[in-house]
Length: 520
Image (cartoon, rainbow, N blue to C red; front, side):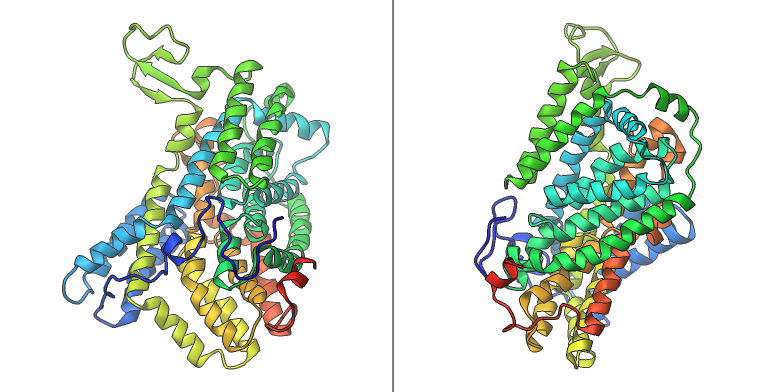
């Protein structure tokens, strides 16, 4: 890990400092504030309506459709317009302002590249290879969720993107585990828990970088100081997955036994493809570059070793034979179109991309309307009167904001100024503030059924060529079902609630220097 001087803004994996202007949400702007009928609190209407819609759709009606959430976000954003005082232009401009922020683009880019990579490994037989390895190593249905939690956590820590790790593991490890008999709900939750672990702890994670920079702390010191919290949550989570793996039964899939018997090892060559991504990311390369190199290796392995044909990865279907139909990537069919793993891996996330842009736009409306400021001032002036109560409000405040803004980095940027302000008021060390800020951001972004981390995994299941299409409806898990089982996320929230109450790990500004924490 390269040590960065205390207080200096480190470069993100894209090479730019992650300050408010770079990421957008919560940054200062010359745009006029939006005035609402009903005051600052009325600016929360779009997000509040969206959350209510998501709760009814996912929780009450049991419908996990991302397209339905898009409709709820569109209606909520439109309703907010009718509460604006005066000209609606500033409101409309704010929608565009939110949609063009880097914080949304970061998640979108990770989904697209990770989707192409994971789908290319899938057509190359990686799922079958994992099933073969599980049988050889005697990793059964009961232990598969715990193994998936650990492995996903390691991948997310290495590459720094919980979203990308969720895409890869739901595409590859999830069907392998379900086919050997693991509970789909528990396995999906275990993958989300691994993503929480990596997003929280990875030095190159956006949430780690933003939490450190906004609290004037160095990344090396932040990671070293938060390790004890991450492990305190990870150990009971691992045990919980071992226990629940024995309790929760899987689903009987037609043909699963036959697939297990015929599963072969060659697809395991793609462990090298995943290793390339991890090694390149750990070496400090941009995550897009890291996944691109992994994708190049995966395509080469598929072609050289006969794991998949060129048309499995990209194919142009035409209705009539022509001059190019002799090419390996052109075929004749009843309906013209484009297909293959590269196409399916990207296009499956389009509805979620639209939803992400709308969520960030609604957050920007609440920021420009003063809603977030009103929440922060209320907590600061009426609740945070002692150090213990201050830390409790920091923990609960980040939880509340993350429940509203479900794209974790965006939520973190929105609440970061409040965490810095209240922390400095009580002389709390920057590392402590950064750790409180990042814990709920990482955890709750993978728990709520309308959260980005959950929906990105769900989209892999229900996309146009997703798991549900390939294996059947048993491979689709309603996001509301996984909420109780994202053990590492819940335990991480509990750890910080207890830390705020008991003072465990509490440090004040004079307690440690950057160098001391980095050596811890």
